Image (cartoon, rainbow, N blue to C red):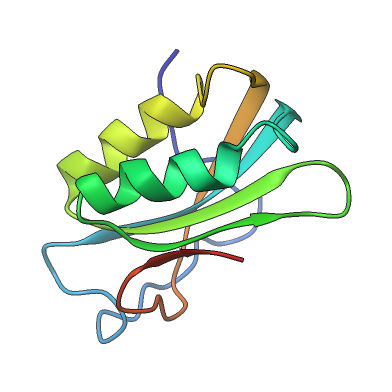
Amino acid sequence: MRCKLARSRVSPPTIDRSLVSADEQAVRCLVHGRVQGVWFRATAAERAQRLQLRGWAKNLADGRVEVVIAGSPEAVAEMCRWLWTGPSGAQVSGVKLVEWNEPVGPRFQTL
């Protein structure tokens, strides 16, 4: 399974390059399936730190996990591929990706 940016029916977002450097990419990923209560966020944080990514992982009230990541395009792509698998207890049924154009903190954290 490949990570692709979701296409919106409205005009695509404008990326403010002051928020992400020219050699970086930022995406928001919504991970569906059995992804809460299985150490998804903690494992995502470990993986993101190894890949030198910034951002966060956050449980959502509807059972999904939101993962916002920023970094080199190669590291972002590798993290996106990992999100389809997650930790051993996860059962990922889908990952929706969209470009992110908001500020991302200086490190990766779990919220």
